[in-house]
Length: 346
Image (tube, rainbow, N blue to C red; front, side, top):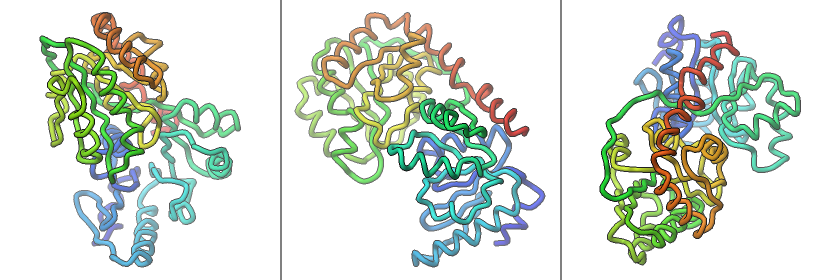
């Protein structure tokens, strides 16, 4: 395939990254949304191929040859675009080869260690811009006088659904682990915490949406739960809108940030559909939930989450009234994408 011919004179902006054509993970979702709004294309590098405009280039199976091929094609892509939105860890081999002045680097999480931040402070000024979707990290970079920062919240395009009235107060969990089974990963998502807290409440239902990973752990915990008859575990592809219709609130019970974003898209979606959010203060989004009174925040302890569920149920209408207003204030595509357009003069 002639990649230059495929892209030349047709696109000036592109989104580059790993597994961006799946649309499943948070960063992939954001790139899908932004690329549509900015009328650009997505170039996605997977383990076996590179995809662009619904066409795929197979990569060699040999690891060394694969790296060489990725770098070779990446350099070809660079020539086709003026601005490239790019998401990758600092460990990526591509950081050594890209022409950083063309790139808008995308960051969604704070750095875990100060030494990684120090390393990034040397790289960041070389980029055309850095989009940061973490308030704490944004403040750190600005404190070190990194001037090319654009802070935005994650955004989703507004849709509306007709909510239904439930007989029993229904709590929905949409943030199951992904990837290889890991008890550490499972525990970090706060699922056991949620199940134990739910056991201490009455007259409500719990729906858990699952994605295969760590299935044996959740099945065991549900089996041992005294209220297992009121718990539904759905481990298959579903229409998210249909399941959100059935819920009265969404819960984000994270105990740590391992494999967990600070602004879960499931919580943003819930607010958009006028659903209050019960959110642990482990994630940055809890500050907004508390400030805008569109849900309840809690410390990652069983008694705290039990209390939060009861508060949400008793004050449901008040929180519900503020939910969509909060989405529009912070997470609408229009305002967040306008920031990017203005800063990059698109």
